[in-house]
Length: 171
Image (cartoon, rainbow, N blue to C red):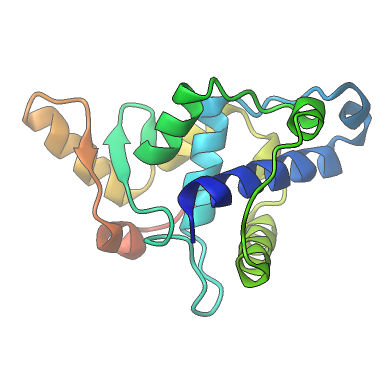
């Protein structure tokens, strides 16, 4: 699955989820899906497993432990390079399209539904609530502690450590 295309589709679905919980904001296009918040939600989504389906490793395979939690660096670079603004109306007005196969769309939709089952209100939480939640994960704690011991503010996170980590989707 192409990471950029998956990211674009996920952003559209995060907007839809947000407006599902906040229907009055759909008209104005207001939302609080900042880059930081979107990066955290993509991390959580990538850690969901439904049967054999997961997004961890394919397409999301470049996580770093950073001060504000795990960051998928390719997705972060996409946001920064494109000055990406997540706004429902602008997203659709600019006709942002994604190129995913039907089974890839179904996979992402299924995983989003699983994440909703774990915490339906997650998309309404603040970016810093989500940051704090990622700081509960052992994979982040261990990787970031190692980075700090080496005088760095980031360290690559291994996919197998993320898979084995305790998982928190709410307090």
